[in-house]
Image (tube, rainbow, N blue to C red; front, side, top):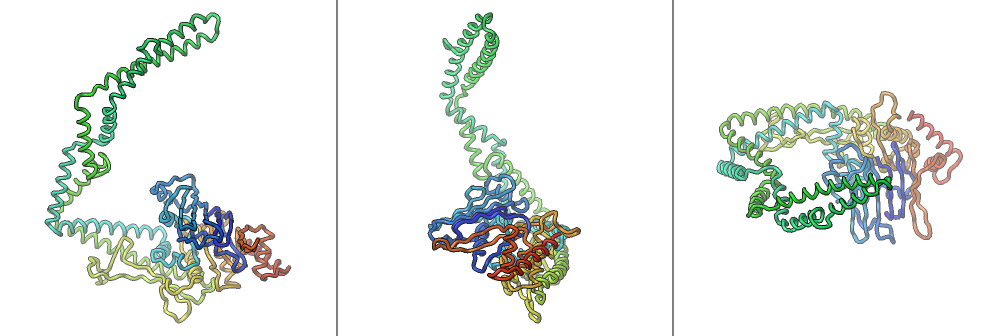
Length: 584
């Protein structure tokens, strides 16, 4: 969920800080009040492109920051791979856009790239409303929505198809190498054998390179080390007035006064312990000094050995351990190439068997997708009927691309195929009766897309880990009973844990909805008002959370317009109370 957002100098908004909560967060306000600015700020945090034209007049830069509790766990791996530190379960994202054109991105106060932010965004929030930000038009998004209907069984089938594809691809690649350019294969075998012999001749040991570098540094600085150790040993024990001699004299002096000074004996014991430790240290230093006499030519031998290892590292890996790992890979490839040569016919049979195994799994997946599509369309139809799209029709089309050179044929046709099967999933939409359904991405309006997505979310199985959903003007073109139904559906989709009705599936999360309908606003768990005012000749936008009475007044304004009456206030209270009863 999005915990808080801070905006400074974005368009006409000078500064705003908003704390969001779980459940349904509603932003309302008069037309032109600046609600879209809040959505624009969220888009920036999701990695949207920015320009200096977005900066408030008179300011040099705009800043947007947000504190998120990201969905799922994969975001941790993403940040770790980028070298970014992670503290706790929250992520701080900040965008800074300067009038000079400089655009800076920070995650957890560490500078990073816009690309990384775009990769992180799916774990933070998903914006619905503006066509260029609505992921629903993307083919992969449509496919994932369909496959969620399949649940755990569907995931298992998808995994089976992917595993079968990988097996076939691996075997087909081996057969291609074997039956392809025979000269290239022989050259490859010669190269692998040479590389294996070169690594074997070096007789590497993991970690040897690090040990040799450490020894080289000692040999290069042996004179300085010897001087330091010899001088230190002399100061401790050999020189006149050494540390050990002085400690001994001090011990004697304390012993002379033990009869009169109660602490003298204890101090003497401490000095004796120091003397023993210093004597041990002096002995250790002397032994190390004696061991510094290296055999003649040892430094040259170390340098030569390191040169051999580093040459192999440049060719095969980063260090000695990586070179040894590469040796294992070479051995495996040699065994494969040499073994395949003797068993060419058997390998061809394995390729054909793997392709047939994939075909059966992919055809089964297609059949299941057809069933999932029928279930999804039925569920979405029931939801759309209550959202002002009762006469619209959604359909699921499974298409297969022909590919003349494909080894896979289904129903006598050579088709393209991949790890996710042989189908292209396309959602089709017909807004009015009598019209042929056409691809959703080309025919649906922004408001229709938002409502369709809401219906898909409600009718398919909820994502196990869902980011914050932002619905911008999802209520465009509806009113009355349809608006009330929309409010109930948004509230149901966003309902926090512990507040669901008995038997209802766990679909908890956080939703931010920009709305102009009181029927939607009355279902809010947290209500924010966006307002615009002129102060000192400058236009300013405010975003403020509404307490109970202020919320009633805002819902009344949405009902009655500019002039709020006692009747509209009474109606507002009734709407809010009715929404509260729906939550229980």
